[in-house]
Amino acid sequence: MENYSKARTVERPSVCPFSGLPADTPQIRVKDGSKIRNLLRFALSRMEAKPRAAEEEEEEEEGGEEERQEAAGRPLCKHLVFTASGKSVSKAITCAEIVKRRLKGLHQLTRLLYGTVDETWEPLEPDAGLDSLTVSRNLPSIWILLSREPLDGSQPGYQAPGRYDALWAQSSSREEGGGFTGQRPGHRRKRGGGRGKGPGRQSGRSREPVKGQN
Image (tube, rainbow, N blue to C red; front, side):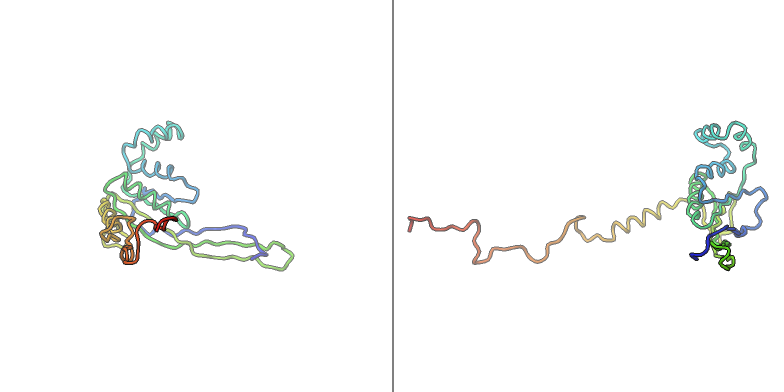
């Protein structure tokens, strides 16, 4: 491909796998350049009745009073969808986890799909007789549904609301106690026995006869 240069990239995102959602369900598409702060502000404004005062002041400074009144007049949603593809998948997961910590009792349903990216490559020298190339490749994507209403727990990718601190505490205790052998941490057992005094050994400095003495 040293004789080609990428001309354009067209992404064909995957279709939302969650059927039966209300028409007003917001779908937040997380991109590589998206800021988590802005994504969370929009998500919480659609699902939380009373945002924090600090976020209200920040929203009022950046978006103005009209934008804040418009967000406050919207009806609260019972469902929220985060979606991302490629390198932005981890950012979408982070947003979903923060929302779950902020709003207790949310049910989660996760789907992993593949989207398609079409890349068009043009020859560097048009007179070289080379044709344009179109390369299609699959791009992993994630869809995360957060719902205030109970979801079907038998579906794969379902996570019930709750705290998982006990699970993390149990795993950390196993890691700490896995290498326990009755010794203090950092203590190294000596190999073999201690250096004893043999019959031919003498302690201290050797005494040599002083001249002039028998």
